[in-house]
Each structure stands twice: as structure tokens, then as C-alpha cells.
Amino acid sequence: QVQLVESGGGLVQPGWSLRLSCAASGSIFRVAAMGWYRQAPGKQRELVAVITSGGSTNYADSVKGRFTISRDDPKNTVYLQMNSLKPEDTAVYYCNLNFFTRDYWGQGTQVTVSS
Image (tube, rainbow, N blue to C red):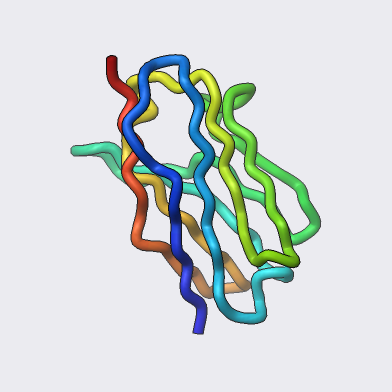
């Protein structure tokens, strides 16, 4: 059984930074792709960034150059470093673990960017 626990969300001003963390239980973390998704009020959940087990990354166009996804396999943890935050980044951020046809989700962490 896989459990994902996100942390690091909060209220920040435009231009500030936050780092989200997602700690995973279970033994498949090292062979799984990890991703961060977000869902703003009234909108569908969207992919923010993904990192494969080999370390390849992909980002949504809206966050390229500002966000960085990384993983620490010995700690079973994936991170999302978010810089130059904008009000439009406000959303609940969810951690995702994908292993073949299986998807696991965390409970989400709120990020609010407002002056």
C-alpha cells in the first residue's frame, strides 16, 4: 500500500518562493514516476511537473523556468521548488505516484499567492 503525504504549502506574496515536499511510503517509490498536479477553484486538475524514476523531468508551460521538481530516493521524497510565485499559481497541490497503470494521490496542500 502506498501513502503520500504532502507538506510545505502556505500563504505567500507574489514573487516569493515555496518548497513542497511529498513523502511516500511503500517500496515502489524508486521505480515510479512522481508528479505534482494542482487544482484551482472551478478548474480541472492539471499537471504541473513530473519526474521519472530515471530523473527525466517535464513541466507545464506555465511554470517552466520558475518551478523545479526533484526526488530523493533514499528518503522516498519528491520536492517541488516554486520560485517567482504568481497569484495564478494559487491552488491545491497534489502529489502523484504512477507505477504502470496504478495512480496514487496525496491529500493535497493549499498554496495561496496573494498580496
